[in-house]
Image (tube, rainbow, N blue to C red):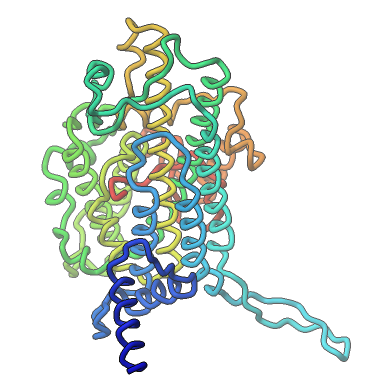
Length: 469
């Protein structure tokens, strides 16, 4: 009888526990870590059948998915909730800890017990990860600190979509109709708040440029998959089309004139041009490396002309990246990420990509508030102070003068003159671009090279596409 009563009590407790939504059993960090790394080891194939993706792609997807779950779309300029911030720092730390065990052998001198000097090989973290993971962590922290500075602000708020009294204020004049509209006091923001927001925007711009430089460099170093190469036509003319091919192979090539002849009216057309140019670059490089004229990649055009065409196409790609960083990933980038087997490169690419995306979003939200402030001060000046589109923002990024405000260049002890000198130094050392000015009659501001160096050394480099965010 006592046993039966106890069993009934236990069954009743279990029933109440199952039905009571207020009773929660929080999972420990150890359980969360076990689950996360189990998914990585299984390659996202939870059946255990060995049909999962590579470790590199699994880690890349894990970092991307974590950022999406923590940050979302960031429709408002506001500080991060403490629990989400803690979740991000904890779980991104778990995923980045993999890089601590990616090592390379380096020579090291040691003194034996007998007092003799000898050289032995020791392991250390791979140089590209050792230089750039700490840099990315710092950029990540700078973005979080920027949002944390909004904790005590009360000068601007956001108009609710359901507020009929604010219907006129709530109607955006650009293509971001789903983003809430910021609301400022009738006379605009105070001078300290306005200056602080501009200071934050200048800093975020530098974070954006640094992260996109890292991302572009990592993508350029990834191997081109054979599946992508097999999908290409056998000559550049078929990839580009007659009109684009004629423009690039003409005796005199002017990049500015080339873009005036191209239809850049939509994101789809810009991406299509980028796909065509990247495919032609790969084709021409393979033709230049063909060992004999009988191979399917052989060429009837001289090596010098082929090299000149490839350099011109590289310049077009550089300008596209500088002017339109918000376009989606190209077919080549998607293919590289999908088939990349280097875990270190996968982590660098995905981490830099999400920092780049967040910086661009925060920059846009700050611009929205500054626009609302400008409209409050001078409602008739809406044409000048309207919100910038992504394409216009790019031009502003490339030409912005930040004055005396502290930027990332100041943070690492650099000046613009040093950056220019650094770029010229690498261009002089790289034989690929030795005669580029003479051959194509144009002088791009910076060119991505294949040298391994700290990506923070060249903040003016182009940005990789970001519609993957």
